[in-house]
Image 1 (tube, rainbow, N blue to C red):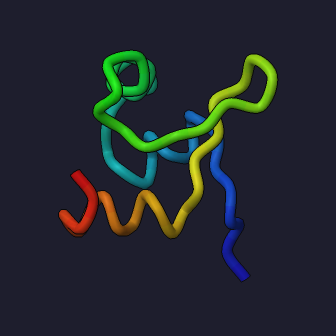
Image 2 (tube, rainbow, N blue to C red; image 1 turned 90 degrees about the horizontal axis):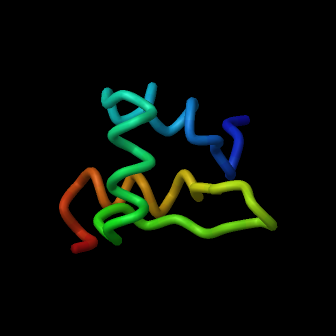
Length: 56
């Protein structure tokens, strides 16, 4: 069973971008994410929809 939540590193590997780019996209609101205290968390189903172009 795949993990439902992803770290920045895991999301960067899934998307194929560097972690620095992931942080920049989060800061500019281009990538759907949430924060848990100071950590950035991604939900796999949301990222999959974003990658498929279903989320803008």
